[in-house]
Length: 170
Image (cartoon, rainbow, N blue to C red; front, side, top):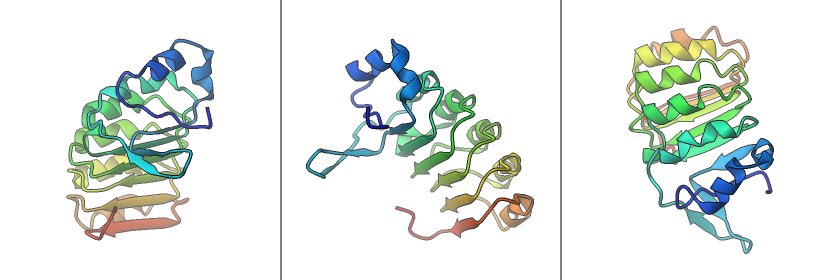
């Protein structure tokens, strides 16, 4: 499998096969943003819904999840709440992620890196990040919270990198 799964279109025949057998235990990364062809070309996924996330809990050993745009939603994040082996979640242009969605991440005790840009997360949602005690890198650009973010993350003793603001987050 090479450690990644291309999910396009959904549900793809390949994904259905993975979910229907024991191979799903070997999937550690799902990149719904893009994949590279054998000749090195980047192909962006045109699927911009969160529909695929309902299948994600089958990948119980998932460590990395990459989402962009409408792939990241409050409803979609509910499906990943039980994936306790997740270490990396990156959500670019996550305008459909709010305080109600980010709460689903607080049980991910092994999460080391969280990137969430251009979301609708406020100070209330940032409070849920206090539970992410393993977090080492937190990137929250272009969101709707205030400087209270610093109060909410100061107890994260493993935090090595914090990126906030309205900078370029592509």
